[in-house]
Image (cartoon, rainbow over all chains, first blue to last red; front, side, top):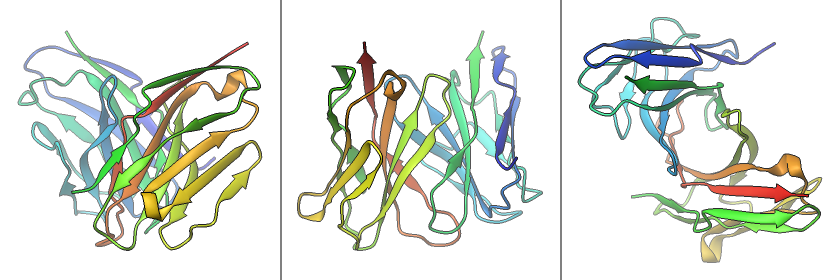
Amino acid sequence: DGGITQSPKYLFRKEGQNVTLSCEQNLNHDAMYWYRQDPGQGLRLIYYSQIVNDFQKGDIAEGYSVSREKKESFPLTVTSAQKNPTAFYLCASSITNREQFFGPGTRLTVL
Amino acid sequence: AQKVTQAQTEISVVEKEDVTLDCVYETRDTTYYLFWYKQPPSGELVFLIRRNSFDEQNEISGRYSWNFQKSTSSFNFTITASQVVDSAVYFCALSEPNTGTASKLTFGTGTRLQVTL
């Protein structure tokens, strides 16, 4: 089946740790995105990538980093510089000017 | 700057009632796309509809219908004869001008719909 997978589903981080969230798609989409969702708020764009080896900052990129070494993969690292990382993280992909398709999300909690 | 406003934070209806979710947007662009997504309790966003700014025809898909009015910058979503399975958070979103293969979206804060028996 074609789609987007995210792992893990739940992730716990200690203060000062970096953690990496996985996102893989087999839809052959060029563009991929990372969003953060906090309770009562909409989705906010962290980073996006249009092609391999290229990515752009979104609205809330501070404290996050990404890579795009393969078309199907777009991992997100939440660094210790992110002061309030507890949130629900959603990955998406799309083709040009079309709707974005979303993965099931990763819920990150800082202990 | 682009903005999407979903003024209704939460709506509660009884099954079989009709319900309309409001979406008002702001943009300076003449070409843009509007979207509606559904987020059930599982968390994954499900795409419902995409509308081009040049196409003001209303659309109906089963119990769902959408009313796009450019004059009032609104893109409202109506569920007819609501069902318990419609309970979810619904997001309206607006695309920024495409400058490449990516299409950045601005999301509203969502409307939580609760349908009870």
